[in-house]
Amino acid sequence: MRRLVCITLIGMLLAGCTPSTIMEQPAGTALPAAYWPTETWQISTPEEQGMDSETLAEMFEMIREQDDNIDSVTVVRNGHIVADATVYPFGPDSKHIIHSCTKSIVSALIGIAIDLGYVEGVDQPILDILQEENCRAPSCKGRTIANLDADKEAITLEHVLTMSSGLECRDSYLYRWRGLHEMRQSDDWVQFMLDLPMAEPPGSRFEYCNGGSFLLSAIIQETAGVSTARFAEEHLFGPLSISDVSWPSNPQGINIGWGELHMRPHDMAKIGYLYLNEGQWDGEQIVPADWVRASTRKHISATLQDGYGYQWWVTDDGIYMALGYAGQFIFVVPEKALVAVFTSELEERDFYTPQILLNDYIIPAAESSTPLAANPEGVALLEASIEALGSP
Image (cartoon, rainbow, N blue to C red):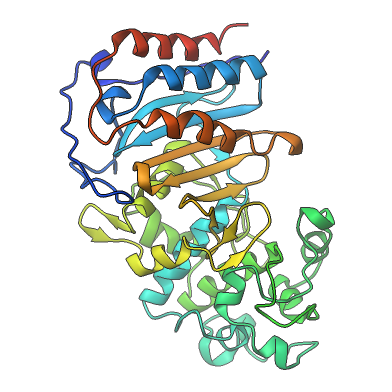
């Protein structure tokens, strides 16, 4: 059995901190933040944040019994970490590949780029964005497009954001990533994507397209004139004090827009908390609030979840998430003021295990919007259940 080490069940009772006051709130909104976890997350017992320790303990016991390949679990309510676990060989400061959760971060950067005027808006055709008059990159000069027709000219930025471009990508798990391998072997990944034939008119249906998410990174880089990673550092990661990320680029120097970003689970939780607060962070609007709302509502029926927004997955009951291969998740549950992060190395058959744990344990544990009665026995049980995961 794998061993769970560097696990922290953190609580005000155990740390000797003063409990915070939790005010009643309308359903679906985050509490006004008394602090911001820019430098570090504050810690709390679950009960102080209206959550039941014993229910969370049952979740960790279930993880131990099933021996799932879950690498970390971080549960945040009202901006406080109430349970936190990292699995050997990962430690609290270990970076993890977040796979397609990267897409949701790129979406945030697109919203920022629109707000700053680098891109006109979601109705702008992508061919207009990536051609000479709008592009600062030398690669755009004299770019010609193969298989050009009225359908391709009609592809907008919103079509790419919602995985409904109509391009014949064939680069998802459904095709065993065949199109992705072909793009990687090409001399110019942007040109490869723009040259693809159309499978159907844009907006016809959801069809997962990793290469489309790569085009979003290219749009940021070629309109802002800096790498997507640098743009993120200046406008997103920096204000949230997210550092020590690694984000590979393709041979043309464009950061991989569909995945391969490595970051720490606590920093993943910051992205979720930023969105829970509609893009606002410590008095500054990092991502436009209307972009957050548009990104996290259902634009089109999807496959892995009920719907898809702007590179965010959406369920019909109001939960939205960044979702990545092998079980990487940033869950945001606005009605419960919850953010939950999982990093994993799950087999395909176990992919939904984190979502099952969210629905069966984490959400039910959030019993109240005000503090519950102190439960030292429950806190001890939760601590013991987590520590048991580290036993051989």
